[in-house]
Length: 105
Image 1 (cartoon, rainbow, N blue to C red):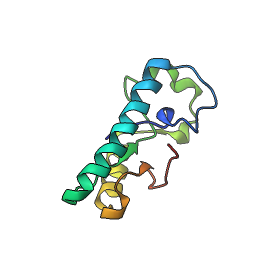
Image 2 (tube, rainbow, N blue to C red):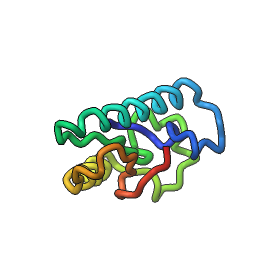
Image 3 (cartoon, one colour):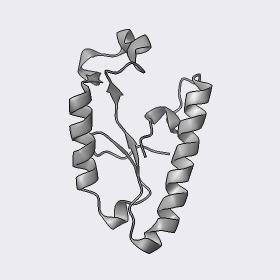
Image 4 (cartoon, one colour):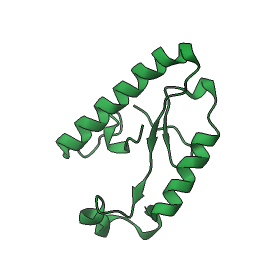
């Protein structure tokens, strides 16, 4: 699932973005639930945080993002594919960022 760090309850230091945060937190819950159920079928289910990617969605707040933290779409896609390609069954249920680092739920 394509999630976002703003869906992390433990990493919510700023508040705001109610609808987006709530939808991503719900997606994270669905990821964990699916991971537990689908593990029986040896299916891996994870939540992925792509980082701030240069798309229309991020345009309104890109001015506040450091240039090295704003990723081209191609970079983000490549990074996420690398993360997915490296997954093993024990990874199911994790929340992982574009660099392969765990994000706390």
